[in-house]
Image (cartoon, rainbow, N blue to C red):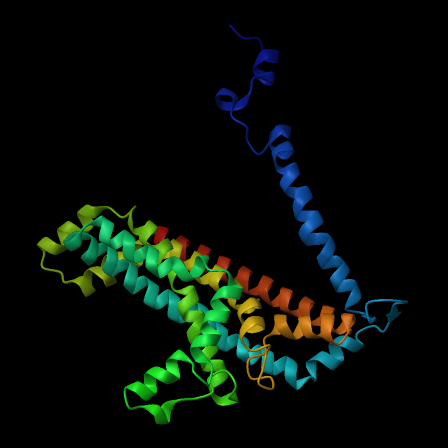
Length: 314
């Protein structure tokens, strides 16, 4: 028989560590330290520099909110955010929508008719651009799209559509759509992999019952697939939105934000001010605004997901 003292010192629920145990906080300590060193401290320093005029060396001159006043009147800053909306279309809306359709077709049609190996092979092919280094993917696409001897222009001329040949990345009217098309190609594999993994947990009896009732593929897609993988859809939409807001590598490799500011985005605009124009304070202000927008978007996504889940639970 245990005494009251023994009952107080007994580990809760067979030795499991709960959020009330001091041991719980020890597990969080390494992650908390790394988060503070890698994320919190640089962000606080960045916010501090956004109130200064500093070329990167020498004394720092504090100028208050002058960088933010200048930023909100800067046409390049607003142009970069308009391009971010284009990136959200290319990296979130199109890949998520098309990826959902592709995953459903691979899982519900290709996998059943040709076997799981065929579906897995196609899934790997879709995901291939994700594992390519950004520099290599950018160089390959630059070769394909270059105006002289580029593969795309050569193909157009070979099929009698030479009038459509363009300087795809050098013309302001085609540069942004070209970068958007490349980002769709790069991004499409990510939602396909996530959605196919999500479909593995859907009860197959739901699809079998729907087929017996005469439901076609699109009706099964609308009535079963979309509702069942809604949590993964939120995750894909959130992570892709964050990636679109802070996209940098493809723009740097393909166009350097040009021609003009046709493909400039906030992260590359901040890079230009940090390293090319030696205007660290102004670059820090751009980075701070971009970070705050990403934080707000993340909170909105998470709250919307929580409200949707509460509504489903009734």
